[in-house]
Image (cartoon, rainbow, N blue to C red; front, side, top):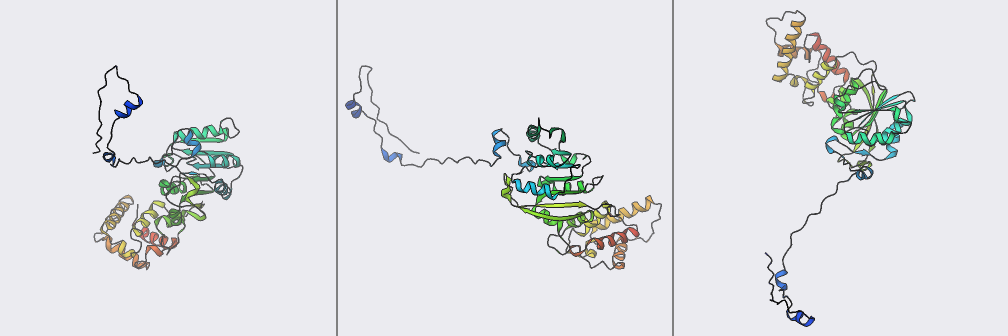
Length: 343
């Protein structure tokens, strides 16, 4: 502890301190006692926020994945690559402060903007109120994953990255079909969407998406094009649903690929030998027989049946990481033919 010794003089009320008397009676402090370290005060870190919105007291919410795309050239490029028509209805997910929304309103007949943050909804409304765009904009407030989407032709969006996977399949299973979607994703997620059999990033997401749509990588986008900048790089992907879709029950397909890609480097024979997998298939088989009034053979053994199916189509040594859509369709049809289902 730093100690300071102070010499105190008693002065009566009638005494006055002149310059000389002040010097004489001055307080003496031993400088050696002041040679001590004072505690450091940490400076507060200022978060990086959008200037215009910050002045209005709105902070971006990381829980909602709010990263505003600030580069007008990228916004323009995304809008152009979506091939919008004047008669289109465009869907935008996570419009934020409305930078892309305004560009869409300039191109199409109607824009549906889905925003979960009421503060940003108010800012978006301010940008269009009293303009010709006001009547062309419909704002849906809430979680897009829990919202029943209306009809739209095209989707153009810079989405919160944490909802990427469920949003992709919500869009692809949406009816009626839309023409295309141009969406900003985290770069690794985008690379998985377009990955081909044998690629390092090829996975269940890749084949499930490519079953339902054509997917193309359009451009890479650096993190400094956003405010605040995310921790990851981004890419823009174009998704065109296959219309008509393949004649396959998607839940069945998804159940099969889930099993196969649990360990994508293992053979299908190994993947289907897991106790939990055999138990699921046995349960589904018995349910299928019950629904269709089919008698279950007394000597039925799910493990032997599964092995026979794989051997018959020469698929027991195949590995998910190198199998394409046609390979999985063949496996699915072979199992279904024997009454074995995946959902």
